[in-house]
Length: 444
Image (tube, rainbow, N blue to C red; front, side, top):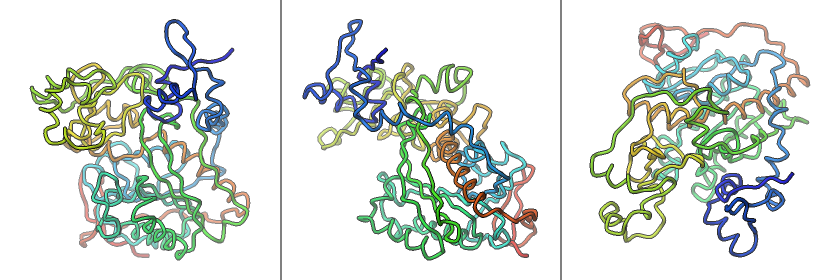
């Protein structure tokens, strides 16, 4: 029996806008049928699209059975509030060390996983040599503002951009079998491709072979959010021969905001109540006029002019402004603040910003994952995170890769991972039992 899809479902599945699907309808590229008074598109019409075929032929269920052949240990840098770390743990990795500069994000890690070894402080103050040849995977989402389309795009001219070289230093000192880097898609084409070429040369210099970088769309990995992230996977040169890395297969369908906030396939209950920001009175009045899935152009013209001010006369869609989400679509990419004028993320029914727990659900954090600090800090931690389900999918692919390497080159390491020493010398910090201690450079 043939399946049929609404225009919204087609747009979600193919990862395109409804306006584009409407254009295809007008040009005859897609021809809908009227079923129950609603125009719908048959599965047969979607099969020529690669995005749909990948969902229809996915190996997702098979990949759920991937398990590590032995204990694989990981170190994560720039760990944030734990989206990537939790996903890798779900996939089967054991965390040996996490490093994070932000105090509240580090406290979030310790609150949820008291047994994790969390070093809070400047990565430049940590000597990683004591972990040499004891770690299977080193991962890190090195700070991305320098490469973001929304940032200043200075790249390596920005001090944050140079933090990639700290990740490279850690890889060189630790010599893990595999490393994973994560960043915004803007890095791929930044500075006309020169930035990614610099990164590739550095990876080659430290003795690793880079898998062709891939931008993954979170909507295809059981994440109800239109978020795209660039992933870099490197394999140590002495292990790379006849070894193949396979990116994760997509989930069977695209999940939506309703899946995130209501009881169903993703979560066993409706989203729990939590703190959240509020709109000023006039802004609330204006946003109450925006329909689900709409934005500032759906307002009356006089209200558009009032809300947009000089931006009313500028080019571009500015579709994030005065934006209300829709139940039957994935959320737009979450930012560090849900009520900023340029990146509005209004609840689909109630006229308010998304709450902290709604934010967390859209990033697929479990409800028992607690965030520390002020409400603003919690939004920032969640907005900066890698979606957990996306990280889990990538993690399974990394487990499969390490399994393949292990079959070819069995590990002979049996020694325990050394602990980092804590004393009073100035250096990085580590959280333990709710208190902050100074952490000296590790020494053998």
